[in-house]
Image (cartoon, rainbow, N blue to C red; front, top):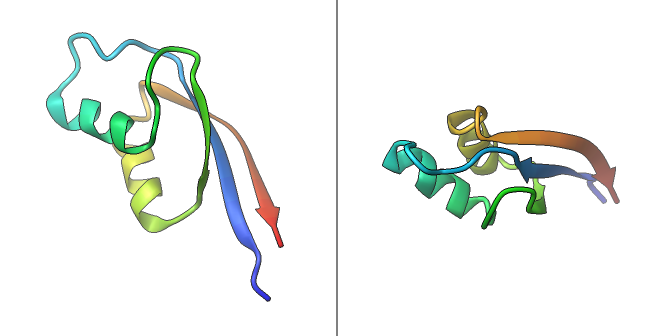
Length: 66
């Protein structure tokens, strides 16, 4: 059985004044407003969205789950 890496992220800045692609990436990650936290699988798609809007979010922790 493989282990899945999980990432917990938190939105720390407002989307006001940001580019449309950044707003869509934050929405695609499941974040809704400032201080909202979500736990996501560490997939290449999610990591790409995190990289795109890294100035708006903060990575809190990374875990491996069986």
